[in-house]
Length: 391
Figure 1 (spheres, rainbow, N blue to C red):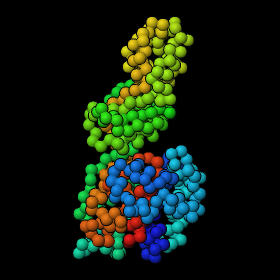
Figure 2 (figure 1 turned 180 degrees about the vertical axis):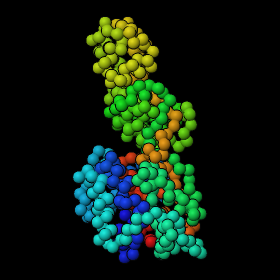
Figure 3 (figure 1 turned 90 degrees about the horizontal axis):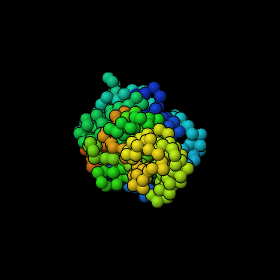
């Protein structure tokens, strides 16, 4: 995005790409569909950026979701808006987005060099080029836009942080974000592969509710994953044992009273059955043994002998199914990286370093990150545009 706009502004541009193919990470985003942005207001975007949103006001004012959508449509990639205002190519192919960039760079005469940048050339407080292997390349300005540390096999292995540190920049703590979560509760593994839809997931920091959303999630051999879990993970700031707990409302469409009536109805149809068999219509098969265990009601107790108090306990489990959280999965499983070059050391209008003139930053290498829904790519595009304009 930065290369295209810098070239459109009349600059001579070189892009260093250490992979054989451009946009490897872009090509796998959104499960290969590429959620390019979120078709919503700037205010909505800011609400979905928990880390340093104020830093982005200026770049978003220059280039927001509307401009991003117009940009791709103009490059011949028709877009569509789906649930949650998520924007995708009509073709559902991330390759179409990456290929459009390739075509436009070629058309504008952007030079592509397939080499890994190993260092910056800094003279008298100014960045005036890069080194790649034994070669030196001199320029008026340099933009570091090589992502974070997640999905390192796509090329984003933290090189950008090392280059920024060479220029004296502070790198805030690097953590995984939008990442699956590990649970010490063994019953997660027992339910491995169980996908839940239309459930409400709540995340608690000790007693305090810090996230709640309706959607989908998945139990795995290590804990939990899926869209709701990934979004919840970005609200966890300081992972400590016994600090964070998830509560799943398995029947969010019913109040506690309505659920109790539903349980009573199911029980009336199964009076002489064992408890474990009496809730078959109520819960997915893999969840039943776990719900039985957590409710404290013996699996073989006859439905007609279940007390009001036992029924209340079952209702509690269904409305507040608990999953303790003990850790993030590794950063290479994360969709994005939280942390990066400190925003205090970057001019928010120009994306230029405050420490070294001629050095610019864009995208995930900066200490800004957002929830899922196209917001992280919009951060990349907005900051890239600002950098290109001032370079």
